[in-house]
Amino acid sequence: KKKRKSSETTHDLDESDPQFLMGSNSSDDQGGASSGGKRIISEDGSMVSSSTNIASSTVEDETLSVIGKIHVRQLMKDLKMKEKALLKKHAAECKSERRRYKKSSWELKMRHQQNIDLLLRQCVDERQRLREEITVRMNGLV
Image (cartoon, rainbow, N blue to C red; front, side, top):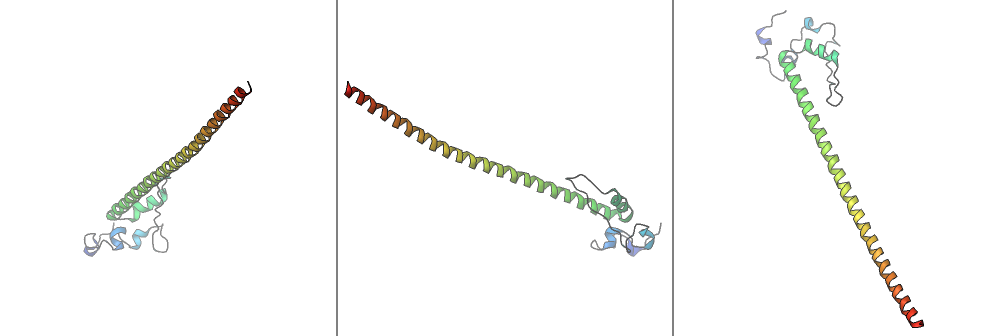
């Protein structure tokens, strides 16, 4: 392994510097998986599908420095946490939407039931009035 100069050590590099996260950029470290002098690392792991790209994890192990690996792990952890929070928020929104729908449908049902009760009451009252009129006429004929 090639020894680093004191200017290339991780404590001398700025954290925003790509060297800090990716390690050395020498041609010895590039290997056969290079693409135009730069490595391409796929970050297509997903909590929902639970799938990861195995090829990218092996390339990741070869190209990243220890600090870079820690940083990538933290980014993936943060991404999964954000995704989980977003899914939780979405589930809560769906639940509240279902509750609103149930409540509105219940209110509509109750309004219709009140209308039906009113119509039935009117019908019963009208029937009773007609019966009384019939009884009065029958008594008048006798």
